[in-house]
Image (tube, rainbow, N blue to C red; front, top):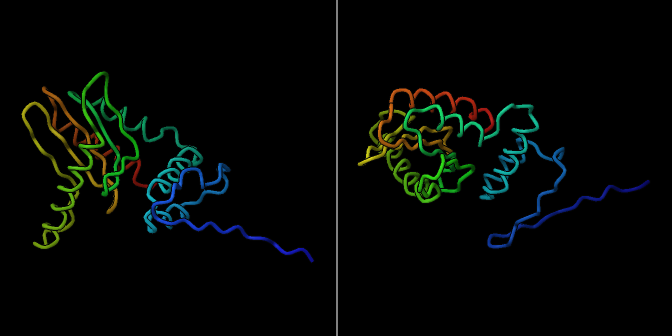
Length: 178
């Protein structure tokens, strides 16, 4: 009788983990992505989420969802889907706008986390959405789940109501993938 062999990968923090996931899309499962996420291997979990999104027969990937969100929102300039620790899953910047979405996401992820903590401490319920108005732009962030959020940056002439509506729809379309 032939014995099955099982490959085991030992992944340690600080190792160069690039390329350790097999290229065979049939290998990926949502459970595997969740396990990788719990182990702190967010980049690998994100790769699996993206493959599963395509494999599931969805018409639009994350980039297309962000592009539609930003392009349909009057004054829309940029959008991101980001983990709470600041790792971007996908960014979209319209035209030649000069936004560093990675830096924006990292900084506002921290603020969003503080708002969640304050809301919890004050027994106000879960934070769903947060917006920041600055001179010349507005950022609206909406939670996808406890670990991920989506944000849109609006420039001058923004329509906050429509942007919030479109963001809520976009979050609903990606929520099932997380």
